[in-house]
Image (cartoon, rainbow, N blue to C red; front, side, top):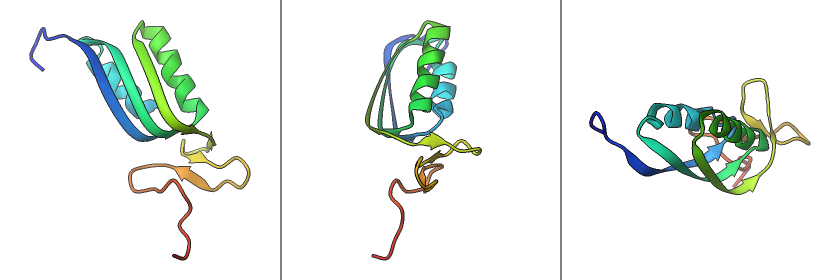
Length: 103
């Protein structure tokens, strides 16, 4: 992007949205040049979606989010865990959405 460039829209794809902070950091870096963001994800926590929505409202950005599944809650490391048993749903790159078992 060159100085003074502006774009109508930006598409962000994130397989697993836990807290939403990675996407917010990207939007924050691009918001001088982009006012509309479309986010697509395979999974998200409700907390992550609320955080993104609150950021969009605070900054005046237009943000749409489409995810395949919403579940879980954040643990003290901001990873998404299953509410019933505490199993990891998503975390950093390399984590899996489903528990790893004997194949």
